[in-house]
Amino acid sequence: MAHVKLHIPGPVEVSDKTFQAFRKPMIGHRGQGFKDLYAKIQPQLQQLLYTKQLVYISTSSAWGVMEGAIRNLVAKKVLNCMCGAFSDKWFDVSKRCGKDAEALQAPWGSPIRAEAVDAKLATGQFDALTVIHNETSTGVMSPLAEIAALKKKYPDVMFIVDSVSSMTATKIEFDALGIDVLLAGTQKAFALPPGTALFVCSPAALAKAATIKDRGYYFDFVEFQKNAEQSMTPSTPSIGHVYALESKLEDIFAEGLEARYARHQKLAGMTRAWAAKHGFVLFPEAGFESVTLTCISNGARPGGRVVDVPKLQKLVKDQGFLIDGGYGKIKGATFRISNMGDETEATMNQLYAALDNAMKQL
Ligand SMILES: *Cc1c(COP(=O)(O)O)cnc(C)c1O
Image (cartoon, rainbow, N blue to C red):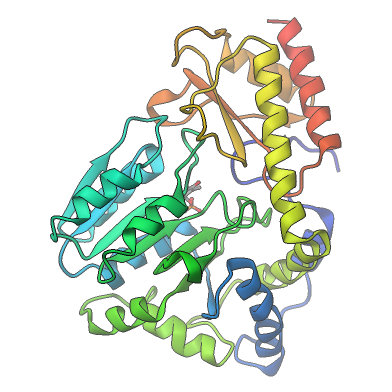
C-alpha cells in the first residue's frame, strides 16, 4: 500500500515485519503465554540498556512515565534541565504535579552543561534532576556521560533521564552511568507504533519511591517492579506492542548494537552533508548534533540559506516523504529530518533525491 513515508522525528516508519508481529492473535496478559513472552525479551531489554535491573513496559506514551518519575521520586525539589520544547515542558509537568521545581535553562540549540548541573546540585536543595538526552525539538544531544560523572557526587539526587529519541540509536549504559530512571517511547528510535513506553529504575529509585506518598496508581513504580518480577505489567498492556517489540529486538540483535549505533551516526552525518551542500547551516551548537535527527536552521541562525519551509514540505510530500517543519518557538525558522529506526543509506538517499528535486523547484 502506497503511503507517505515518515521522516519526522517520531512517529517514524514501521516495517512490515513489525506490523506482522503487532497483529498476532491476542493472549491474556495474566496467562503463561504473556509471561513467557515478557520473560523471553527481558534479557534482551537488559542488554540493550546495559542494566541488571528489570525493564518495564508501560502502556502510555513517554509523558506518562515522565510524569510518573516526578510523582514517584520528588519529595524535596526537582531541578529540570531545559534546552528545548520537551525539556522545558518537563518543568511545567513538575509544577502541575504540585512539586517544588527549579528551571536550569540553557538557550535552545545549546546542550545541558555538566558544570551548570553540578553548580546547582551543590546548593543541596534538590533531591531529583531531570535531563533530556536528545532534545528532539532542537536536534541537540547533551553530554550525558559528563553530566553522569559529576552527578555521582550527589548520590541522594535521583537522576531521571529521557532518552525518548535516542534509546537504541546510541549507547546509554544505565548501570554504569548511575542513572536512576531511564525512559523512552516506542515510536521514536525503536520504530514501533506509538502507544508504549519502556523504562528502568535503579534500586535507589525503587527504595525512594516506596517512601513517597501520593505517587498515584497507574504509574506507581513499586507496582511495576512487583509485576515485572512475575513477568507481568500492573495493568493490561498493549499486547500487540510486546509482540512488535519481540520482533524488533530480533532485528536489533541481528544487526548488532555497535553496528546500529554506527548506522545512526553515519546517516545523521549524511543529512548534515545534504544540508551543507544546499547552503544551510545547522541549528545545534557545533559538536552537539543529534545522531537520530537533524535540525536545520532556516533563518534561526545567521549565515545560512532560507527557504519556504511549508512549500519544501509539500514538494517533498508529493514525492512520498514527510519531513518536519520545525517545533515550538522555532517552527519555520528550522526544519527537521529524522534518520531514526530502520533507515539505511539507500533509504536516506531516496529522501535526499526527493529533497534535491524539491530544492530545484523553490
Ligand atoms: C517525543 C518526545 C517526548 C514525548 O513523547 P510522547 O510519546 O509524545 O509522550 C518526550 N521527550 C522527547 C525527547 C521526545 O522526543
